Length: 312
Length: 95
Image (cartoon, rainbow over the protein chains, first blue to last red):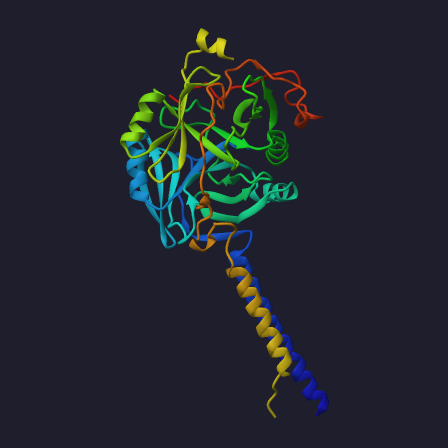
């Protein structure tokens, strides 16, 4: 009788343990590194391809408390149109230009009592989010959001780099967009402004496999180009005096930066950095949208002029 | 005779389950709220200051053919940049 009792007791205890383990596993799978979302996001390319360009900036997301206001501003400034998608308890709008997906705008309230800055999040292409995550965490990054897979789009995750700048990685399931010159209204360039460009460059090189190029400068700042596939993908620059928070900023190609800046102001934004010539010869401006999110405007002529050569 | 598991084991199992639930429910880091189901919505710490960009502060890409400065510590041992000019952005038009 005692033997029978002991066997039944052990079986019951094992059953409870198995139940608990199963419950825990289910929760971890739902929240863990390879979690799949319940909703679908459209692909980032207008037609699927087998092209992959690790290291290329392939997407940007704006988080804002005012989706309608953001759509008015960016639609008016760049001619973007929007498709709103319900995402959980919120709305995610996909911006397109000429039928090409450009960006996402995610509406989320700013947490009560917190002073937060609406901002654009820069997505860099990877082949494997898990591998990128492993490298990033091993070299000083912190995870802000674990990898998550969205049907149609692919897997993505969010990190801060060792200097504290926020960035995201995306393994696009529809491939990466081809290497074309951005048209007006499309993203043309991305810059990381940071305290220690050398340290940041070493981090991004190891995670994304970039080639690095120092650029000559006469402004006392360090400027490093991140390149892959023999194309410049982004720049890393010493934070200008007075800046305290390392961050990425993305630039949209415009035909006339001064005119676009005036248009941004008319749409409720403000100018953060006045128009001035950059090293490629075109004008660069930084504006803030009505909620304060910074976005760069950059001219880029198709023709390489003598004036540009002198600015090198 | 009906079997009842020892009470301490029940407490242990319930505690472990609660710990797992709590660990899973805690979302994000420093302003990121993962509970809305979308990875990407992140508010930066407030607030940026964009003063200090002098007229010579240039953040754009080079046109092709800009020689790199060389000797960068982060370039050590890497084949890239070894005397080659910095590349530019793609120049091919989509249309």
